[in-house]
Every structure is written in C-alpha cells, then in structure tokens.
Image (cartoon, one colour):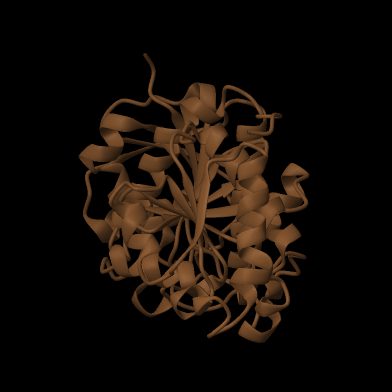
Amino acid sequence: MRKPLIAVPIGDPAGVGPEIVVKALVSETVQEQADVIVIGDRSVMERAIAITGTDLKLHVVEAVEQGDYGKGLLNLIDLKNIDQESFRYGEVQAMCGKAAYEYIAKSIEITMAGKADAVATTPINKEALHAAGVPYIGHTEIFGALTGTPNPLTMFETNGLRVFFLTRHLSLLQMLGQIKKDNIVSCAKECWKALKRLGAAEGTMAIAGLNPHCGEHGLFGWEEVNEISPAVEQLKAEGYAVAGPIGADSVFHQAATGRYNSVLSLYHDQGHIATKTLDFERTISITNGMPILRTSVDHGTAFDIAGKNIASEVSMVEAIRLAAKYAPHFTKGIFKGGI
C-alpha cells in the first residue's frame, strides 16, 4: 500500500518555511508515513539544506510523476522565482510574497488534479503578499478562491483534540452578535460533514458554553438559554450526536481525554487558548469544506530567526503527519449527506 503523497509549498522564502520543510523531511515520522513533493525555488532550498546541515539531496522534477520518493531525497518542483542577489532573510519583500502565492497555487493545482493527496502549508507573510499585489490576505482566502470554496471551515487538532470555530476574527462585541441559534445549527452541521470526510465522526460533538458556568440559567447571561441550548436541542432532534452547552473551563479537557470527538468553540481565543496550551507546537490547522484537504502549521514566518537553523520542525512534521492520516479517508469523495 502506497503512502499518501503530500504537496508542501515552502511558504515565504524569507521566513522559516524552507528550513522547517528540510528538517521535517529527514524525520522518521514523515519518512514512514508520507511521500512529499515540495514546491519552491531551487536556490532557496539549496540554502536551506546547507543551513540545516542535513544530507538531503535535491531531486528537481517538472511533474509529481517524476519524483523518486526514496530516503534521502527532496523532490522539488522548481518555480525559479527567487533572485538570490536581491533575496534577504527576515525581510518583507514583494518578490517573496509573489513567490509564496505561486507555490501555494501550484500545490493546489497539483492536488486538485489528483496528483497529490493533500497539501500541508508553511508560513506566509501578509505584508509580503500585499506588497506583491496578491489580492488575498492569507492561506484560507487563497485556498477558498482557487478551489471555488466560498466559506472554508477551519478545524484545529492537537493530540487528538479537535476544535471547530463558530466565529474567528471578530471583536468580542461583534462575536456576541453572532451567537444565534441558526448560526450554531448551521455551523455544527458543517462540522459534522467535515468529521465525516475525515473519517472521524464516531462519538459526540460538544458545543462550548459562552458565559461563566454556562450563564447559570440567566444569572451571568442569557445566550445559553435563548440561543445555544435551543440550537443543541434542534440538532439532537434532527439526529446529530451533540452535547451542550458545556462550560468552556472543562469541555476542552473532556474532549482531549476522549469524552467528545470534537468541540465547537464559540470564538477565536476560546479554542486557540485550549489547543495551544495543550501543545503549542503540535496545534495544526485543518481547512475543511474544500474539494481538497489542507493542513498547516499554526505559526508565522518568524523573520527574526529565519535562516539561522533555530526554528523547530515539530509543527511541520505534525502538519504532514495529519495530512497523511486523513487523506485516505478524505479522498474517497466529497460527502454530500447530512448526518
């Protein structure tokens, strides 16, 4: 049985992406669980290999089928888009923003064509994208546009704890306006579709509470009484295995220890704090709802340490591992059902 083939764009060349890719590829975990095709620039990857002191050999190919996925080789599709004379580590450069976008676009193209099983992305820089005139602010927007997915769904996973988000980049005041029964029901159903496609739908999903002690029947807030509990009851009536609202001070621990298969977090920091406190380096973002599977490290370009062989590859290893873990289930086809 062949290993899943994961496409890995190197991210912003001025950041830590290239070096964590190199270090991830020599890890036993990646070598045992996945084949990897890297999309980047040859000169950048040659420098990354030298900086990290690894004994990987570059194998430059024009197509995935030309790859040799034996041990000790880094299979690279070279887009030849970095001028080493003007390239500098740790700086915002339009050239690097443009290159990072092109690496992602090529990875999506390969995976949409069925030549790779999933994409595992590395950090990009929003300022560099903007400087390059790229009309998207980040990975999620790029993937959404290039795969024709209006509303990609983000899930975090770390050490078996899976967390979805009802709302993300909103102020707390704006977030409160989104805590509505219909929003919760709709989001929970999308989460179930995602779990189904990942082969992880056994068990019960927990809906987190919003207020301290879930509001104590209105003593500390009415959102649980008026919106969250009615949403849970509707979902149950429709046959979904959900529980809640469950206090946010305990629900993530309960899910991490196996009581629930996932948690629907109501806002950005509620879920981010839980996952990153459990294991910061192994918190991986998984983008669902698209025709292809994408996992990603959940850290930035780290310009301050780029090119210094300081950055840890743990998150990159985990992103590739989870892509390989879920790809065999995901590639069975788009799930179109309800429960």
